[in-house]
Image (cartoon, rainbow, N blue to C red; front, top):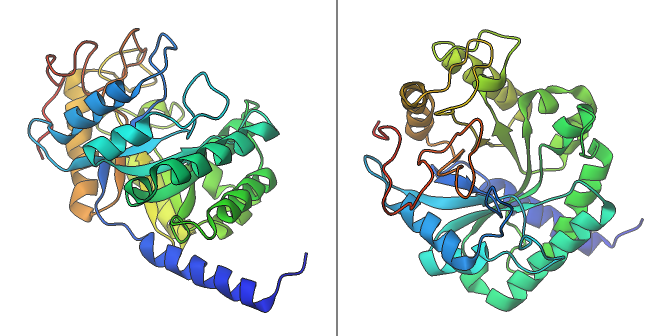
Length: 316
């Protein structure tokens, strides 16, 4: 396909702006799903309650960002997720997520919701956006025989998103992809890295069954994957988009879930990333709500977030 030179110049300018604004700046936040464990959709009041709890944690501060997995309200085709007005109300910054797996319609619906959010909420929304993630662990799932997409399809989705935000207030916002480090290290996925502004690293030593993965081994496991991703990324920033240690659940290899070990992991990983100024979205604030997660990575147990206590000390 042919493009006019002026259009190519505009695209290059936007890409350069995105690369600059993508730099790590010490953002701290959590991952937020679109629904509870009983499959009930979260409403605006639910997101506001969670966002406000995150902003007022004991022993730590500054957790004012939310990573979303989808732009779509759970249970609808393409309605804007209620996390957007909740973020506006609570002044919570957003790492947007657009779900790409399942069908070709997935990205079409996500983009429709993204455009609707821009049109409906304007700068009150767009000023909160710190990045856009196209997909989440799609390459990992595809390679594992699960519902995911391969690199070329993912690049097509990334291109569609860039085209959708061109000429809007989100033009120039850094666009990335979130996946496991072994997916990024897979040479067949190299072209994805070439088409994004930042890499989202998901690292869970707890799940690394084939390697030493006790809580004592966790820092080595985590930083081995993180540093390999940094080397692969070159001059592109790497955000930590998911990591955590469960407070309960089954033992995986030598990894034992417990409140005590979750505290150690927080000290070793969260505190070290914070000190380095790496953008971090922890997994997660509260996982067991209207159901019991197994394993449970939540800082808070089931119950009213305004009443229950954190399962472990969050100080550094």
